[in-house]
View (cartoon, rainbow, N blue to C red):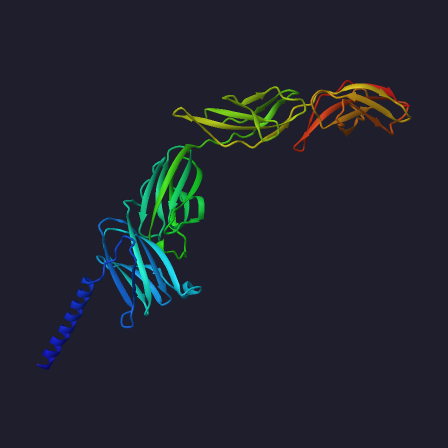
Length: 441
């Protein structure tokens, strides 16, 4: 009989606990999702307080909680699945500068019934929440070119992968908007990484940020992979809303082997290597400054620029383009070619031997500019043996002269002069003047 009474007593206690639990759940205060602030405290006999709320649709719930240093945890429970998630964790470091601490967190939740639990030892707090409906696609879909798709990730413990099929060489511009502190990379079908895992701007629960990645990709299948940064302690690392925009532009390579094939006093002709699949080339010429004064477009692999100044310094560059749907898409510019036109030939005006073993040559500059002159001399009229030369800087005047000393006496010396322009560690020469001679005293 005693055993029966004991069993009845135990059953009664169990039923009483369940009844109390049911009553507690039934009487659990509702947390409004309109931003209203609810204040409360935990007590010595019960270190936790619960509030309930229900979502009719999927969306984002933004929690804000202010507490003193005795508060420890703020957790979320899915009443239908029993799953717990940590929303905010308070540590001693949060209260170093103040006895109060305020934290916020976004939770991205499916429709359903939820409760929050505030846990602390005799602590005072205030809590508020707001809800915003979000109807986002699930992650893992194939990305479409020139479109933006939004996604919702409930967990970021593993990378989220999105496939992109590139049908021909294209320049792909990814724009990723996110609330998460994330890292990302791009891989091809073989697993080769086209963009090494890189840390980007840290989004926050309250403010999204946008990062841009530009890649030139060949034909093939690629994946854009995103994940939360390892070790980041952020309330929103348990889930996130993000969007991926994909802009596709034809990828056009820069032509190579840009060089000057002809160079005159008033013109230059440049050439470059052919590229497959392009519709044409655009070539520019600058006077050495920042302004590109001449631009020419065509299909030829050579381009001639005229009306240039003798001995002047110029820069050239070239890029190719393709035409799609009537619109031109340009590739990158080639490396810049530094080149100068040839100076005009100087005119020798006279030659004398004023002193023993010396001769003086005088010449007149051509039109345009030059850096200096080269004087070549020999005791052979055909300049095939014993040729020597000396360079002198231009003095900016029309007439210039130079004296050659310590020459062999009592011989006829032959002299000629040419101008040069120096640009980018290279000299560009005019033709030789007429040859003159004199007997060395």
